[in-house]
Image 1 (spheres, rainbow, N blue to C red):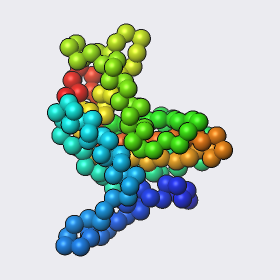
Image 2 (image 1 turned 135 degrees about the vertical axis):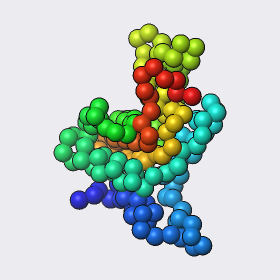
Image 3 (image 1 turned 180 degrees about the vertical axis):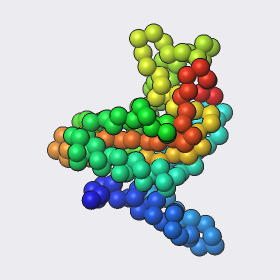
Image 4 (image 1 turned 90 degrees about the vertical axis):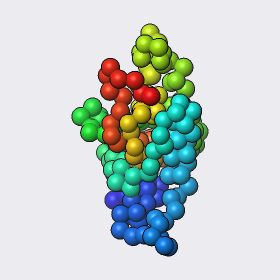
Length: 172
């Protein structure tokens, strides 16, 4: 059973996959999906990378995965090493985490990326940033779930297609 907090993305996937809006255009995305997409595309535009498009299929998959991780795995990160999609995950605690805030947190990893030699600064990670701006990724789907309402903890997962952050290649 899908938790109500995740329903918005599952509904988006269903609407886009099965119907069209007026004059053949898809129905508008809910604010959460728009916020994920706008925040990603702003960061991508800053480095000259093409914008992503929202994928109802990826949104559905992340919705299912976030629900499973919350309900069956105690809101732990999913093991996605064998995933055919690029991905980023975030576990937040202590404050409400909007899609825009999550992307802003992921963008902080840019400071650890050395474009000149395509590496991360020693003792730091930058793969999150590299996936976010990966030049060949075209589609995005994300979902969030509150794990514990009292502690304000949440899990966010985004999938990117095609997969990015490939060893030896530059993100943009």
